[in-house]
Length: 175
Image (cartoon, rainbow, N blue to C red):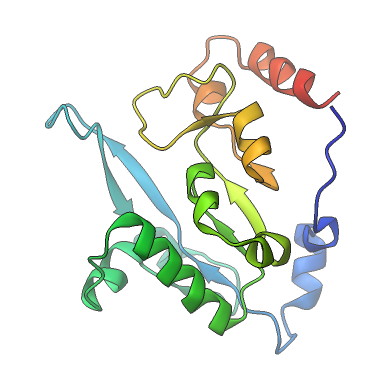
């Protein structure tokens, strides 16, 4: 399968980023979170936790931290998922974003103009399509067909007893 990325020029190396840190037009937001897996509540296999303590220790110079959990609840975010996604995309457009990180399923809420204008990075991608406990996942094939520009496949790799085998299987989709 021959993948054509819509914005290959938007991907830069750490060295290139370092050279651009003084650019007044560069906006960097660290929105890092981590999943704290728990058996405390079977209907919710993990809690999403802020990475603010890590950001306070070390971060990209000039980057601002956006605590999605706290900052969004502080401003009364309580829309249903579809409305929330549309609202956040609109807010991002006003702020001049170049792309979004979202579930591949969320891409259905973007119009053609947004899909053409934004880089879309989609985590929760599965090689075999099995959810592995997450609710908003997609297979590699489905995510590409939904319009994802970049796929994040992590859980199956790091939880595998043979990570190289999983990586080779992922490669087989693109080679």
